[in-house]
Length: 96
Image 1: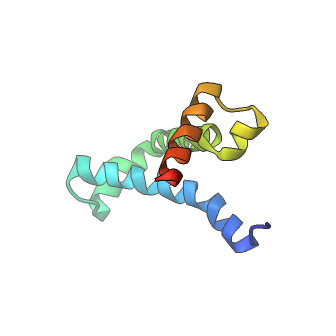
Image 2: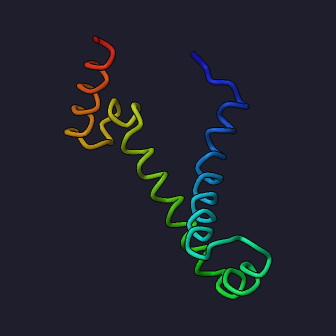
Image 3: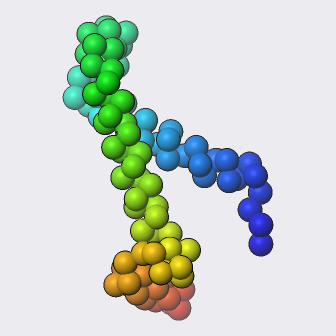
């Protein structure tokens, strides 16, 4: 079964967008609002730090996707105990 190209494109863009949204939501919670003044006063002067924070969130997302992806278990790249646990949880959920 082949996955369509638009769906693959969305799967590739989702981690980028989700990590950016998490970063913005964290700033919204920390600052109380996301106004133009917030961006000018706090975010733009420290743009490099925000870029690194976004990159860290993105790489953590990719790592978790790599570890928990079913193909990683079948290819032997994931943690064996994690793949076994994942298989038991999925089997148990599908059985009942």
